[in-house]
Length: 340
Ligand code: 5GP
Ligand code: MN
Image (cartoon, rainbow, N blue to C red):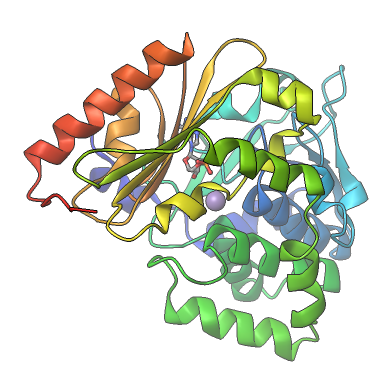
């Protein structure tokens, strides 16, 4: 059955609220290699439930990335414990498929008797007992904001700031076309509740480690643009991670730099992972070039304009396969080539 047929299966905020009210212990999870929306959504809902007097554990397979350590209350994010947690409810946030929670996290949450699945990925197969999948939401953090305000849950400063980080990072600082009037209304409400815009943006965007810029320099040396000017891609070999002492989050968002080239409609980032697998990150500027569809050809997923794949290597083979599929899709679309 297609996702559109499933749409009416969305749980209402009241149904989710009933599960939150009726139970006292929760584990909140998000995807491997967590980004601002994953960690932000966990912290936002986690601190709201803690303020409501619940027992809450916040677990991520890869822990808290260094770049998000500035977030208030982020010390609550833990690596998965080796023994399953005694919790009644597991809540998966921002995670398009259950395996993307990670094996250790799934084991840690294995005693939960109810699963909630709250996400904004259209490809989400609704693996929870209650599902709230809203692909019109630019970030899972915005769904969490709606949930908290609809249910009149506490909204402590940790939650307020975490929602902002989640939505700002998933919208490219409120720029992507997924950004809605509701997003700005929400941001205004958060500011009215005391959020410090200058400080929080400085912590997110003006505080990168130098090695990230060194990575950018190395990536620029690998940049290629297709003859028709529509596709830009760059590549990170695993040796670069070793040489520059990189952390997984260091490459996050860099793809926006080549997506921004005039005329480019699709940007691709190929990253060789330590285990030999290849991570492919794709961004499209044009709705007619749906990168989620391209990603799903290779078992990946995401959103129409931002999607990813984890596939087997070697690197050159993965690049050839993905670029060939991209050019097939471009030829099948009505998109005209550009002359640089
Ligand atoms: P990014 O390129 O920032 O890693 O990911 C862009 C979007 O695609 C995110 O919403 C992310 O959840 C999704 N995504 C990235 N990699 C994968 C993957 O390997 N599988 C699936 N299903 N989705 C992915
Ligand atoms: Mn997200």
